[in-house]
Image (tube, rainbow, N blue to C red):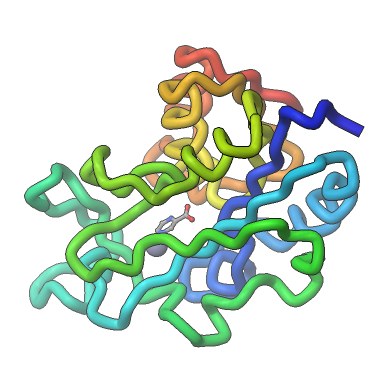
Length: 202
Ligand code: VGL
Ligand code: ZN
């Protein structure tokens, strides 16, 4: 058992990020048994869910003339355009069926405002709109977080970097994460996380 002050954050282990899904991460489903095996070690477990309306501005389909994986400028900065994914109440947005969600103490949905994406579980992509997770963890005395899930180079990375900046001790368990790897983004993410002081464990 880990100390009571350490929470597990399980990021976006949803059908659309697994093989066959709309934004499949290579080997995405392989994290499921790894994560299930970790759940009993933590006193507090938070699961996040990417949860977009169909008109979400991160979808290339909502920007005529643009294709998935292009980057456009939004009022809050650059935004990668994605294939439609994790649309609210669809099968793609559901957790992987083998993930043991009965052990979730808290489920946090993010990315539901049409005009703004949210990779991090703490702040939306404008870097200032809070999701409420920091208050939730603080109220429960959490000072350290271990992060696992999908995708290493997007939602896991952004969550880890924000957690460091908020003052948590942060560990990312790489065996329980998989990346999208757009133009080397996986290695960039590893270096950024190391640089920020995230502990990367294989
Ligand atoms: C994610 C791209 C778009 C993620 C979510 O969970 O890493 N990536 N939406
Ligand atoms: Zn998304």
